[in-house]
Length: 184
Image (tube, rainbow, N blue to C red; front, top):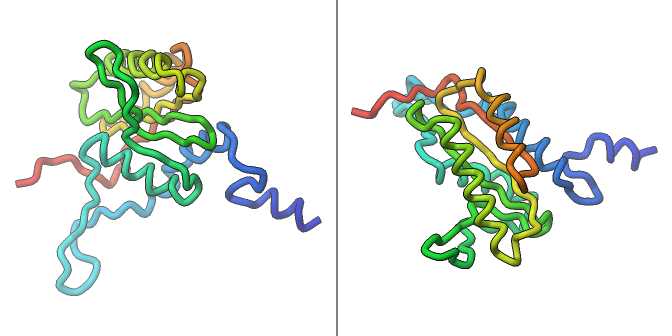
């Protein structure tokens, strides 16, 4: 009885994570963003307000690394692959235990269109497949959308999932508490 209860409430399945478990975890990141630090005034006496900026793709990779490293102790970041002609492909995040690549994208503003992002993901996926080590790996696309264009997310995900070799697509909108005004 207790084993069944533990299996039902365990954060990490006792038998190890699957691709579906990973996708479910990534899709639920917004639940934790409720506590994202974005202060208009300091929370303690004399303190300056703190605002955790996510300004680029590397910040998103760092966030995912922080979240995934305690679960996947084999996580690797910025993995350089064999050159493809003049192109030097690099994997953003790799989980060897799941043989899964996480391709991170960042949409700062509307200048970077969804069709452009789909093209970048298709190019990256095809370059990963050239490398013998990664040609059969799972690939998940993860987009952090600062524009919060939720009306476009379903169509974007449908498009990305049509790309040969893409096994999952997660789109997260930046927390609504974040403002993207330029710093003075």
